[in-house]
Image (cartoon, rainbow, N blue to C red):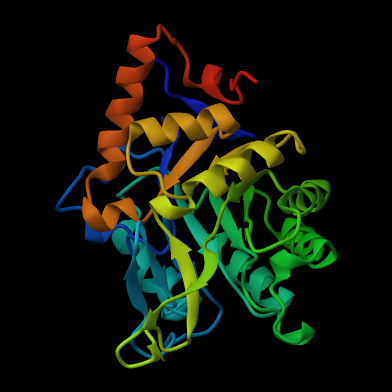
Length: 303
């Protein structure tokens, strides 16, 4: 038997596979394709204090080995999530992790406080790739002091697991990781999307309404792996890796680089059942290599 149980700094999951926020809505979209209860955790779409309509269309563009998106955190706000969405999805998994976004620190704190009454919400994933409107639009996650401050203030009100989702669009992601670790983050998830763009040569116009967007998919995997490896050697808290994971072999690479768990995103657009297939693939790999516990793979890269 292979033990896939993991302990992310007190957050105990039956396996290390989660959905990536924004790629499966709030989980109900996957029900027709897989048993969502099999996931280690269900990470739902980004939730903000107020209703957000998102960016104008077109908001998604396919690129070689990946995709660009500029959804703009479209959601109906925390009130709608608490009163309407949560009651309809709480049966889907024992761990419903809410991706929390905001334009000010007060936004993050408010949303987290509202989630405290939801028992299945065992963790929050704090997305610090959001623009800080009080600092001229610079993302919280591109500045060590700003990232640290968000973490510190959320820690004051949230007594469960705090996962910080880090932006890769920085000079040193390891320094950002150390800054949030110092202020009480229980884990970090990386990486979020890379800033990119697509152009229609025939119209000579950008494909996306906002010109630039977030690049995800297999194209970013080598860079994501490198960043996971760097952060693993910089912090002691667990890492949840993501970025172009399409199959179990990709997942194993992230474990070897230093991840304790993984998130699956873009792959679900190709095959909505990818997550459960990866869980089985990880089990098969461990059987083949006589690995009794999945945690033995974390950081086991031989250099």
